[in-house]
Length: 486
Ligand code: UDX
Image (tube, rainbow, N blue to C red; front, side, top):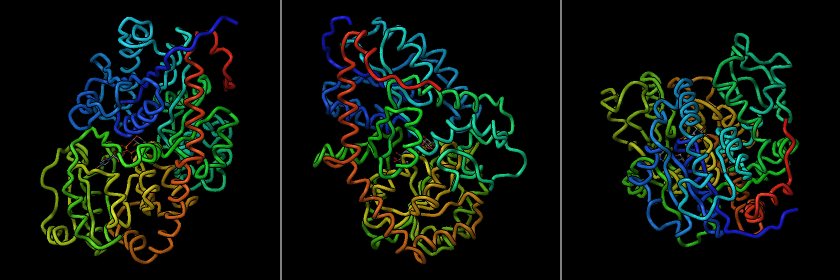
C-alpha cells in the first residue's frame, strides 16, 4: 500500500440543471460545507445566472468552503419536460461536460485544493464515473428521485425478461414484478420513462443505463429516510450495499442550522405576497396547488382544474407558472364564469416560496404533480396530498402516497372537473382527519430521522467520514468498499 497523507476534502457536486435536482443537491452541499468539507457546485450557465439572480447562493451564506462554477455554453436546457428535450440535454451535457470535467479534475482550471471526490446526479453517472476514474477519484451518486422510482428503473431488465415491458396495449392496471413492490406497483405506476412500447426508445435506454451504472460508484445518497422506505431500501442494498439515506435534506439542513433557517435555492423569483394572504385564512383551510418547475398541462386541463377548485368551495393558493400551459407564455386564461369564484376564495402567484407555504398553519392540503422534492416538503410539513403525476418518477411517488404511506389520493386516472372537486372535498373535508392523522405520524418520523441520533443524521455522519477518508492519496481509495456491478 502506498503511503497516504490526509488532504483537505473537496467534493465536486454535479447536478442535472433542473430546479428539483439543483435544489436538493445544493442542500446536500450546504450540509457538507457545515461539516467542514469544501464543495464546488458545477452548473450550466443559465442555471448559474438564475441562482445568482433569485437565490443567495452567491452570497456568503455557505461560507468560504463553497464555490459556484459554471460549465461552458452549449448545453441545451429548453423543454426538459419533453422526452426529446430531456434527451438533448443529456447529450449536450455529455459533449460539453466531458471535456470540461477532464480539464477541471486534471487541474487545468482549479482554483482550490484538488477535488477528492465527485458527487454526481443519478442521471449523469457514466460521464462522472468515467472521468473521475481517469483521475483515480471516487464517485458517489446522489439520486434526487424517490427510492421507489429508482428501484423501478433498476428492475426494468427483469420486467423485459418477464414480458411486462414493452407495454402492449392498455395494461396500466396490471401488477408488475418489481422486486419487493409486487403488491402495490402496477405498470401505470412505473416512472413514465419506463412505460415504453419500444425498448429502443433513446431516453428509456439512457436512463435505465444510468441507474444501473450507479453500481460503479462508491455509494449512493438518497433524499429519503430509512423509516419511510425501509423495505425498498433493503432491496436497493442488494445491488448497492453502501447507501446513504440522509433526507429529507431540506429538513435536515434546517435541523442543523437551528435558529438560522436556510434561504431559497429558487431558480425563479418568489412571490412572497401569498404568505400575507395565508395569514388571513383560517387554520388548515387552504389547498395549495402547484405542479413544480417542469410539468406542463393543456389549456383544457387547466380549465378542468380551475372548475374543480372553484366548485369544491375550498380556499386555494395556486402557482400558475407563466410556462405551465404548453406552447403559451402566461396570458389571460380564466374564463369569465370562474373569475368570481377565483377572486372570492383563491390567490394566484407565478412562483411561491413553497417550503414556507407548506409549513404555514393555514395550509391543509397540497394538490401536487408529485415531484420528489414537493412530496418530501409536504411529508415534512404533515400536509396530505392530492397527486396528479405528469412525468418521470411522479407516477411512482403518487402511488406510494396513496397505497403505501396513505397520506393522500392518486389522481392518475384522469383530471376532469368532477374528479378534482371530489378529491379536494375528500382531502379537505370528508377524510380530513384520517389523512391529517397519518400525515402527522409520518412527519414525526421525518423529524426524528433528521434529529440528533436519527437515522438520516447517522447516515450523513457516515457519508462525511467516508468523504474524509477518501481525501487521501489515490491508492488509499482502492481500500474503500466497492459495490457489485450488475
Ligand atoms: C423534477 C421532477 O419533476 C421530479 O419528479 C423529480 O423528482 C425532481 O426533478 P420538479 O418537477 O421541479 O422536479 O419537482 P420537485 O421535485 O417537486 O421540485 C420542485 C421544487 O421547486 C421544490 O423544491 C419546490 O419547493 C420548488 N418550488 C415549486 C418553489 O419553490 N416554488 C413553487 O412555486 C413551486
